[in-house]
Length: 392
Ligand code: PLP
Image (cartoon, rainbow, N blue to C red; front, top):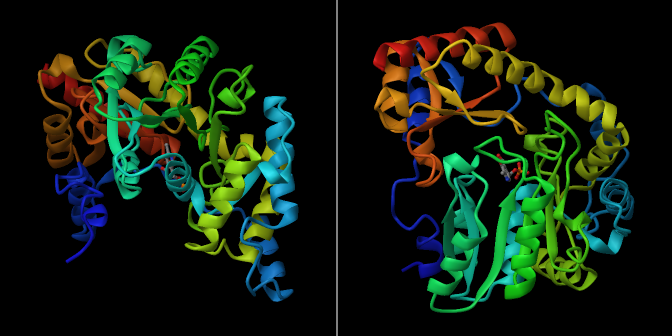
Protein backbone atom coordinates (compact mmCIF):
# COMPACT_ATOMS: atom_id res chain seq x y z
CA UNK A 1 0.00 0.00 0.00
CA UNK A 2 1.04 3.56 -0.61
CA UNK A 3 1.45 6.25 2.01
CA UNK A 4 -1.52 8.22 3.18
CA UNK A 5 0.48 11.33 2.39
CA UNK A 6 0.87 10.57 -1.31
CA UNK A 7 -2.59 9.13 -1.92
CA UNK A 8 -4.18 12.18 -0.32
CA UNK A 9 -2.42 14.81 -2.38
CA UNK A 10 -5.57 15.34 -4.39
CA UNK A 11 -7.79 13.80 -1.71
CA UNK A 12 -9.59 11.59 -4.23
CA UNK A 13 -11.96 14.33 -5.39
CA UNK A 14 -12.37 15.70 -8.90
CA UNK A 15 -9.57 18.10 -9.74
CA UNK A 16 -11.73 20.60 -11.63
CA UNK A 17 -9.80 20.26 -14.87
CA UNK A 18 -12.39 18.18 -16.73
CA UNK A 19 -13.17 21.02 -19.06
CA UNK A 20 -9.52 21.49 -19.95
CA UNK A 21 -9.22 17.79 -20.80
CA UNK A 22 -12.42 17.83 -22.82
CA UNK A 23 -11.10 20.76 -24.87
CA UNK A 24 -7.86 18.89 -25.50
CA UNK A 25 -9.79 15.82 -26.68
CA UNK A 26 -11.80 17.97 -29.08
CA UNK A 27 -8.58 19.49 -30.48
CA UNK A 28 -7.09 15.99 -30.86
CA UNK A 29 -10.21 14.96 -32.76
CA UNK A 30 -9.64 17.81 -35.19
CA UNK A 31 -12.39 20.15 -33.99
CA UNK A 32 -11.67 23.89 -34.11
CA UNK A 33 -11.30 25.07 -30.51
CA UNK A 34 -9.88 28.35 -29.27
CA UNK A 35 -8.17 27.44 -26.00
CA UNK A 36 -8.12 30.15 -23.35
CA UNK A 37 -7.42 27.73 -20.54
CA UNK A 38 -3.89 27.35 -19.23
CA UNK A 39 -1.39 30.06 -18.34
CA UNK A 40 1.18 29.48 -21.00
CA UNK A 41 2.49 32.05 -23.48
CA UNK A 42 1.72 31.77 -27.18
CA UNK A 43 5.42 32.51 -27.82
CA UNK A 44 8.37 30.21 -27.10
CA UNK A 45 11.55 30.94 -25.15
CA UNK A 46 13.60 33.66 -26.86
CA UNK A 47 16.35 32.30 -29.19
CA UNK A 48 18.95 34.40 -27.38
CA UNK A 49 18.23 32.54 -24.13
CA UNK A 50 18.37 29.21 -25.95
CA UNK A 51 21.74 30.18 -27.40
CA UNK A 52 23.04 30.84 -23.90
CA UNK A 53 21.75 27.39 -22.87
CA UNK A 54 23.42 25.79 -25.90
CA UNK A 55 26.74 27.60 -25.26
CA UNK A 56 26.70 26.51 -21.62
CA UNK A 57 25.90 22.88 -22.46
CA UNK A 58 28.53 22.67 -25.21
CA UNK A 59 30.97 24.49 -22.96
CA UNK A 60 30.72 21.59 -20.55
CA UNK A 61 28.29 22.78 -17.88
CA UNK A 62 26.57 19.38 -18.03
CA UNK A 63 27.79 17.73 -14.83
CA UNK A 64 26.29 18.01 -11.36
CA UNK A 65 25.68 21.68 -10.71
CA UNK A 66 25.66 23.55 -7.41
CA UNK A 67 22.60 22.24 -5.53
CA UNK A 68 21.42 25.62 -4.14
CA UNK A 69 22.07 27.30 -7.49
CA UNK A 70 25.27 28.60 -9.07
CA UNK A 71 26.81 31.51 -7.17
CA UNK A 72 26.25 33.72 -10.24
CA UNK A 73 22.54 32.90 -10.58
CA UNK A 74 21.86 33.23 -6.86
CA UNK A 75 23.65 36.57 -6.86
CA UNK A 76 21.67 37.83 -9.86
CA UNK A 77 18.34 36.83 -8.31
CA UNK A 78 19.45 38.47 -5.04
CA UNK A 79 20.41 41.63 -6.91
CA UNK A 80 17.01 41.74 -8.64
CA UNK A 81 15.21 41.29 -5.29
CA UNK A 82 17.34 43.95 -3.58
CA UNK A 83 16.60 46.37 -6.39
CA UNK A 84 12.86 45.67 -6.37
CA UNK A 85 12.22 45.41 -2.62
CA UNK A 86 14.86 47.70 -1.14
CA UNK A 87 15.68 44.88 1.30
CA UNK A 88 19.37 43.93 1.18
CA UNK A 89 19.32 40.40 -0.21
CA UNK A 90 22.38 38.21 -0.74
CA UNK A 91 22.97 34.87 -2.46
CA UNK A 92 22.59 33.19 0.96
CA UNK A 93 18.96 34.40 0.97
CA UNK A 94 18.16 32.63 -2.32
CA UNK A 95 17.64 28.96 -3.18
CA UNK A 96 17.27 28.00 -6.85
CA UNK A 97 14.60 25.32 -7.35
CA UNK A 98 12.94 23.58 -10.33
CA UNK A 99 10.20 26.16 -10.88
CA UNK A 100 7.88 28.08 -8.59
CA UNK A 101 5.95 24.87 -7.93
CA UNK A 102 8.99 23.27 -6.30
CA UNK A 103 9.43 26.51 -4.37
CA UNK A 104 5.89 26.25 -3.00
CA UNK A 105 6.59 22.68 -1.92
CA UNK A 106 9.92 23.57 -0.27
CA UNK A 107 8.42 26.57 1.55
CA UNK A 108 5.60 24.47 3.02
CA UNK A 109 7.92 21.59 3.78
CA UNK A 110 10.22 23.93 5.68
CA UNK A 111 7.46 25.54 7.73
CA UNK A 112 4.79 22.92 8.39
CA UNK A 113 4.97 19.71 10.39
CA UNK A 114 2.59 16.78 9.93
CA UNK A 115 -0.94 17.89 10.82
CA UNK A 116 -0.15 21.61 11.00
CA UNK A 117 -2.54 23.99 9.27
CA UNK A 118 -1.49 25.88 6.13
CA UNK A 119 -3.74 28.74 5.01
CA UNK A 120 -4.29 29.94 1.46
CA UNK A 121 -6.85 32.12 -0.25
CA UNK A 122 -9.71 30.73 -2.36
CA UNK A 123 -9.87 31.19 -5.38
CA UNK A 124 -6.45 29.61 -5.66
CA UNK A 125 -3.95 28.28 -8.18
CA UNK A 126 -4.89 24.65 -8.82
CA UNK A 127 -1.99 22.96 -7.05
CA UNK A 128 -2.16 24.81 -3.71
CA UNK A 129 -4.25 22.30 -1.73
CA UNK A 130 -2.27 19.36 -3.08
CA UNK A 131 1.06 21.02 -2.30
CA UNK A 132 -0.01 21.53 1.31
CA UNK A 133 -1.17 17.92 1.61
CA UNK A 134 2.00 16.64 -0.07
CA UNK A 135 4.01 17.86 2.94
CA UNK A 136 1.53 16.30 5.38
CA UNK A 137 -0.09 19.58 6.40
CA UNK A 138 -3.80 20.36 6.50
CA UNK A 139 -5.16 22.57 3.71
CA UNK A 140 -7.05 25.57 5.13
CA UNK A 141 -8.63 27.59 2.30
CA UNK A 142 -10.11 30.96 3.21
CA UNK A 143 -12.75 32.19 0.78
CA UNK A 144 -12.30 35.70 -0.59
CA UNK A 145 -15.37 37.42 -1.97
CA UNK A 146 -16.11 38.60 -5.48
CA UNK A 147 -17.54 41.85 -4.06
CA UNK A 148 -14.16 42.54 -2.44
CA UNK A 149 -12.39 42.04 -5.77
CA UNK A 150 -11.30 38.67 -4.32
CA UNK A 151 -9.04 40.27 -1.71
CA UNK A 152 -9.19 38.30 1.55
CA UNK A 153 -10.68 39.75 4.73
CA UNK A 154 -8.49 39.39 7.80
CA UNK A 155 -11.52 38.48 9.92
CA UNK A 156 -12.21 35.49 7.68
CA UNK A 157 -8.60 34.32 8.12
CA UNK A 158 -8.86 34.87 11.89
CA UNK A 159 -12.02 32.75 11.95
CA UNK A 160 -10.29 29.93 10.08
CA UNK A 161 -7.37 30.01 12.53
CA UNK A 162 -9.74 30.03 15.52
CA UNK A 163 -11.72 27.13 14.09
CA UNK A 164 -8.72 24.89 13.42
CA UNK A 165 -7.93 22.33 16.06
CA UNK A 166 -4.15 22.52 15.88
CA UNK A 167 -1.23 24.78 15.05
CA UNK A 168 -1.48 27.01 12.00
CA UNK A 169 1.95 27.72 10.57
CA UNK A 170 1.66 29.59 7.28
CA UNK A 171 -0.40 31.82 5.05
CA UNK A 172 0.11 31.54 1.29
CA UNK A 173 -0.84 34.51 -0.87
CA UNK A 174 -0.42 35.19 -4.58
CA UNK A 175 -0.10 38.65 -6.08
CA UNK A 176 -0.58 39.39 -8.97
CA UNK A 177 -3.19 36.68 -8.65
CA UNK A 178 -4.00 33.62 -10.66
CA UNK A 179 -6.92 33.12 -11.28
CA UNK A 180 -8.50 36.47 -10.34
CA UNK A 181 -6.12 39.00 -11.94
CA UNK A 182 -6.17 41.01 -8.68
CA UNK A 183 -3.11 42.81 -7.33
CA UNK A 184 -2.93 43.14 -3.55
CA UNK A 185 -2.56 46.81 -2.57
CA UNK A 186 -0.11 47.91 0.12
CA UNK A 187 -2.81 48.16 2.83
CA UNK A 188 -3.93 44.59 2.18
CA UNK A 189 -0.35 43.31 2.41
CA UNK A 190 0.22 45.32 5.61
CA UNK A 191 -2.91 43.89 7.19
CA UNK A 192 -1.96 40.33 6.22
CA UNK A 193 1.58 40.91 7.48
CA UNK A 194 0.26 42.15 10.83
CA UNK A 195 -1.99 39.10 11.07
CA UNK A 196 0.96 36.78 10.39
CA UNK A 197 3.04 38.57 13.05
CA UNK A 198 0.23 38.30 15.60
CA UNK A 199 -0.30 34.59 15.01
CA UNK A 200 3.34 33.66 14.43
CA UNK A 201 2.72 32.58 10.83
CA UNK A 202 5.11 32.41 7.91
CA UNK A 203 3.91 34.47 4.97
CA UNK A 204 4.55 32.51 1.79
CA UNK A 205 4.30 34.95 -1.10
CA UNK A 206 3.85 33.49 -4.56
CA UNK A 207 5.16 36.18 -6.90
CA UNK A 208 5.55 34.24 -10.15
CA UNK A 209 3.54 36.97 -11.95
CA UNK A 210 5.66 39.84 -10.62
CA UNK A 211 6.32 41.21 -14.13
CA UNK A 212 2.67 41.14 -15.21
CA UNK A 213 1.13 44.28 -13.71
CA UNK A 214 -0.99 46.51 -15.86
CA UNK A 215 -0.71 49.58 -13.66
CA UNK A 216 2.18 50.46 -11.36
CA UNK A 217 5.01 48.37 -9.98
CA UNK A 218 4.97 45.06 -8.14
CA UNK A 219 4.98 45.29 -4.35
CA UNK A 220 6.31 42.28 -2.43
CA UNK A 221 5.45 41.85 1.25
CA UNK A 222 9.19 41.24 1.72
CA UNK A 223 9.57 44.98 1.10
CA UNK A 224 7.26 45.98 3.98
CA UNK A 225 8.63 46.99 7.39
CA UNK A 226 9.17 44.00 9.69
CA UNK A 227 8.09 41.39 7.15
CA UNK A 228 11.37 40.30 5.54
CA UNK A 229 12.08 37.95 8.45
CA UNK A 230 8.82 36.05 8.18
CA UNK A 231 8.26 36.12 4.41
CA UNK A 232 9.29 33.43 1.94
CA UNK A 233 9.09 34.74 -1.62
CA UNK A 234 8.49 32.20 -4.37
CA UNK A 235 9.62 33.38 -7.81
CA UNK A 236 10.11 31.90 -11.26
CA UNK A 237 11.24 32.61 -14.81
CA UNK A 238 8.30 30.63 -16.21
CA UNK A 239 5.94 33.55 -16.75
CA UNK A 240 8.35 36.49 -16.75
CA UNK A 241 10.66 35.07 -19.43
CA UNK A 242 8.42 32.56 -21.25
CA UNK A 243 10.52 29.73 -19.83
CA UNK A 244 7.83 27.42 -18.41
CA UNK A 245 9.65 24.31 -19.60
CA UNK A 246 13.07 25.24 -18.25
CA UNK A 247 11.96 24.93 -14.62
CA UNK A 248 13.90 27.81 -13.12
CA UNK A 249 12.44 29.13 -9.89
CA UNK A 250 13.58 30.28 -6.48
CA UNK A 251 12.65 30.82 -2.87
CA UNK A 252 14.00 33.91 -1.12
CA UNK A 253 13.97 34.43 2.62
CA UNK A 254 15.96 34.35 5.85
CA UNK A 255 19.34 32.63 5.55
CA UNK A 256 18.60 29.82 8.02
CA UNK A 257 15.40 28.84 6.22
CA UNK A 258 17.21 28.87 2.87
CA UNK A 259 19.95 26.65 4.32
CA UNK A 260 17.33 24.20 5.62
CA UNK A 261 15.66 24.09 2.22
CA UNK A 262 19.04 23.52 0.57
CA UNK A 263 19.32 20.39 2.68
CA UNK A 264 15.89 19.33 1.41
CA UNK A 265 17.08 19.94 -2.18
CA UNK A 266 20.18 17.82 -1.56
CA UNK A 267 17.88 14.95 -0.61
CA UNK A 268 15.26 15.43 -3.34
CA UNK A 269 15.97 17.29 -6.58
CA UNK A 270 19.73 17.75 -6.29
CA UNK A 271 19.30 21.13 -7.94
CA UNK A 272 18.62 22.03 -11.55
CA UNK A 273 20.90 21.57 -14.60
CA UNK A 274 23.91 23.88 -14.80
CA UNK A 275 23.30 24.83 -18.43
CA UNK A 276 19.71 25.75 -17.58
CA UNK A 277 20.96 27.90 -14.71
CA UNK A 278 23.33 29.68 -17.11
CA UNK A 279 20.44 30.31 -19.47
CA UNK A 280 18.40 31.62 -16.54
CA UNK A 281 21.23 33.96 -15.60
CA UNK A 282 21.39 35.23 -19.17
CA UNK A 283 17.59 35.72 -19.18
CA UNK A 284 17.72 37.81 -15.99
CA UNK A 285 20.59 39.88 -17.35
CA UNK A 286 18.38 40.90 -20.28
CA UNK A 287 16.73 43.18 -17.70
CA UNK A 288 13.34 44.81 -17.16
CA UNK A 289 12.98 45.86 -20.79
CA UNK A 290 12.97 42.24 -21.89
CA UNK A 291 10.45 41.36 -19.17
CA UNK A 292 8.17 44.15 -20.42
CA UNK A 293 8.47 42.75 -23.95
CA UNK A 294 7.36 39.29 -22.80
CA UNK A 295 4.40 40.79 -20.89
CA UNK A 296 3.35 43.17 -23.71
CA UNK A 297 0.95 40.80 -25.55
CA UNK A 298 -0.98 40.16 -22.31
CA UNK A 299 -1.15 43.89 -21.65
CA UNK A 300 -2.64 44.44 -25.15
CA UNK A 301 -5.20 41.65 -24.77
CA UNK A 302 -6.18 42.92 -21.34
CA UNK A 303 -7.02 46.23 -23.07
CA UNK A 304 -9.08 44.36 -25.67
CA UNK A 305 -10.92 42.51 -22.89
CA UNK A 306 -11.59 45.70 -20.93
CA UNK A 307 -12.95 47.42 -24.05
CA UNK A 308 -15.23 44.54 -25.09
CA UNK A 309 -16.58 44.02 -21.57
CA UNK A 310 -17.35 47.76 -21.25
CA UNK A 311 -19.48 47.59 -24.41
CA UNK A 312 -22.07 45.25 -22.87
CA UNK A 313 -23.85 44.78 -19.58
CA UNK A 314 -24.35 41.07 -18.98
CA UNK A 315 -20.82 39.98 -18.12
CA UNK A 316 -18.86 41.93 -15.56
CA UNK A 317 -15.09 41.80 -15.30
CA UNK A 318 -13.17 41.84 -12.07
CA UNK A 319 -10.50 44.56 -12.11
CA UNK A 320 -7.87 43.26 -14.50
CA UNK A 321 -4.80 44.45 -12.63
CA UNK A 322 -2.25 41.77 -13.36
CA UNK A 323 -1.36 38.22 -14.39
CA UNK A 324 -2.28 36.76 -17.77
CA UNK A 325 -5.97 36.22 -16.98
CA UNK A 326 -9.34 37.95 -16.94
CA UNK A 327 -11.91 36.73 -14.43
CA UNK A 328 -15.43 37.25 -15.74
CA UNK A 329 -18.57 37.29 -13.62
CA UNK A 330 -21.23 35.44 -15.62
CA UNK A 331 -23.82 35.15 -12.83
CA UNK A 332 -26.30 37.24 -14.85
CA UNK A 333 -26.70 34.26 -17.19
CA UNK A 334 -28.05 32.18 -14.31
CA UNK A 335 -25.48 29.49 -15.12
CA UNK A 336 -22.70 28.11 -12.97
CA UNK A 337 -19.17 28.68 -14.27
CA UNK A 338 -19.03 24.98 -15.10
CA UNK A 339 -22.29 24.94 -17.07
CA UNK A 340 -21.35 28.14 -18.87
CA UNK A 341 -17.87 26.89 -19.81
CA UNK A 342 -19.23 23.54 -20.95
CA UNK A 343 -21.93 25.06 -23.15
CA UNK A 344 -19.47 27.61 -24.55
CA UNK A 345 -17.10 24.81 -25.50
CA UNK A 346 -19.82 22.66 -27.08
CA UNK A 347 -21.65 25.42 -28.92
CA UNK A 348 -18.90 27.93 -29.75
CA UNK A 349 -15.70 25.91 -29.63
CA UNK A 350 -14.19 28.27 -27.04
CA UNK A 351 -12.50 26.82 -23.96
CA UNK A 352 -12.28 28.84 -20.73
CA UNK A 353 -11.82 27.64 -17.15
CA UNK A 354 -14.84 27.49 -14.83
CA UNK A 355 -14.32 29.54 -11.66
CA UNK A 356 -15.25 26.40 -9.71
CA UNK A 357 -11.92 24.87 -10.82
CA UNK A 358 -10.19 27.26 -8.43
CA UNK A 359 -12.20 26.56 -5.28
CA UNK A 360 -15.60 27.66 -4.04
CA UNK A 361 -15.26 31.42 -4.02
CA UNK A 362 -15.24 31.95 -7.79
CA UNK A 363 -18.46 30.03 -8.54
CA UNK A 364 -20.43 31.76 -11.28
CA UNK A 365 -17.24 33.08 -12.88
CA UNK A 366 -14.99 31.94 -15.70
CA UNK A 367 -11.28 32.59 -16.12
CA UNK A 368 -10.10 33.62 -19.55
CA UNK A 369 -6.39 33.25 -20.28
CA UNK A 370 -4.98 36.06 -22.43
CA UNK A 371 -2.93 33.56 -24.37
CA UNK A 372 -3.91 33.58 -28.04
CA UNK A 373 -2.94 36.19 -30.62
CA UNK A 374 -4.84 39.46 -30.50
CA UNK A 375 -7.32 39.04 -33.36
CA UNK A 376 -8.33 35.50 -32.37
CA UNK A 377 -8.58 36.64 -28.76
CA UNK A 378 -10.86 39.50 -29.73
CA UNK A 379 -13.01 37.18 -31.82
CA UNK A 380 -13.24 34.57 -29.05
CA UNK A 381 -14.14 37.08 -26.37
CA UNK A 382 -16.74 38.78 -28.59
CA UNK A 383 -18.35 35.41 -29.17
CA UNK A 384 -18.23 34.61 -25.45
CA UNK A 385 -20.00 37.87 -24.66
CA UNK A 386 -22.68 37.35 -27.35
CA UNK A 387 -23.19 33.83 -26.03
CA UNK A 388 -23.65 35.19 -22.50
CA UNK A 389 -26.13 37.79 -23.73
CA UNK A 390 -28.17 35.11 -25.48
CA UNK A 391 -28.33 33.08 -22.24
CA UNK A 392 -29.33 35.95 -19.99
N1 PLP B 1 2.09 29.84 -8.86
C1 PLP B 1 1.09 30.28 -9.65
C2 PLP B 1 0.10 31.24 -9.10
C3 PLP B 1 0.99 29.81 -10.97
O1 PLP B 1 -0.01 30.24 -11.75
C4 PLP B 1 1.95 28.89 -11.45
C5 PLP B 1 1.85 28.33 -12.82
O2 PLP B 1 0.88 28.48 -13.52
C6 PLP B 1 2.97 28.48 -10.57
C7 PLP B 1 3.02 28.98 -9.29
C8 PLP B 1 4.03 27.48 -10.97
O3 PLP B 1 4.86 27.99 -11.94
P1 PLP B 1 6.28 27.33 -12.26
O4 PLP B 1 6.43 26.11 -11.44
O5 PLP B 1 6.27 27.04 -13.73
O6 PLP B 1 7.29 28.39 -11.90
